[in-house]
Image (cartoon, rainbow, N blue to C red; front, side, top):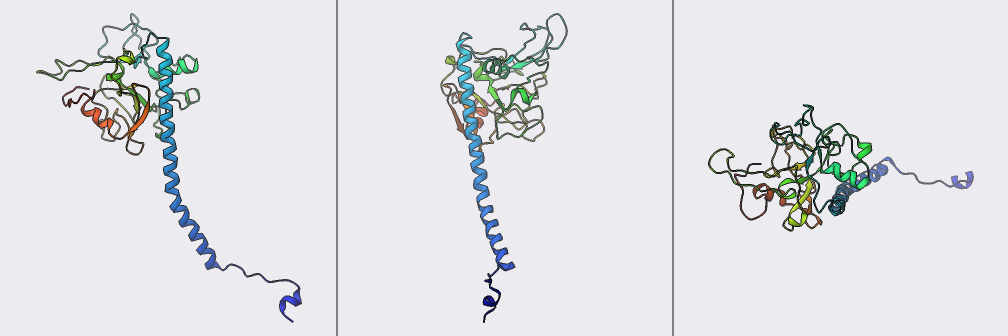
Length: 285
């Protein structure tokens, strides 16, 4: 009589340790193969979300223009006092309130659009609160790209391209230091229909972006001519430039309010800020 018949129970063959290790190795190999694909799919989803967010900006811009005589929001403005102190140099956001000597608080286009979209006025006594995501619970990630790394308070990852947005003009330097050079004024905006078609309005910006122009604009809401593709003052790619975080390219919102990914535009803007076919080597940012 067999052992199974004597005990009334059937014996089952168990996995050996080697078989278990082989199965675990196969599963690990499959995971290692799938993980890069899953990571790419995740980044692609973030890129799609970024383009969709830029299109939302376009819708908000169109709505803002409808009630503001066709003008876009200014890249830089002062909510405390709309007048400017003529004694203050340059376009510093720290210029004084007229007659008081107290520093002004600087806001940007982000504060205006946020207030318009959410019907909630921004009142924070700090420069560029939305752009810097000072209170994340209030602003959320509305002006943040999901692919961008968090970088402290300098976490506004979308910036307008000032020469186009404000309708400014530049002249190449001629004889003398900056003597014949004009710049766009960040306190002014223009009508979008006065901008040439297919020109960029807003784009992904480096999360470590800085201006470093000595005028206090170290984390402004705009990127100026010549700054589209610079490395920054300390060589760690922290310049006030557009970012190529989406597979080597940048997402832009264009004049006709369509948004798209472009791998070459930021480097083209660095050489030719208005895309007129002339290389602006001596353009002063």
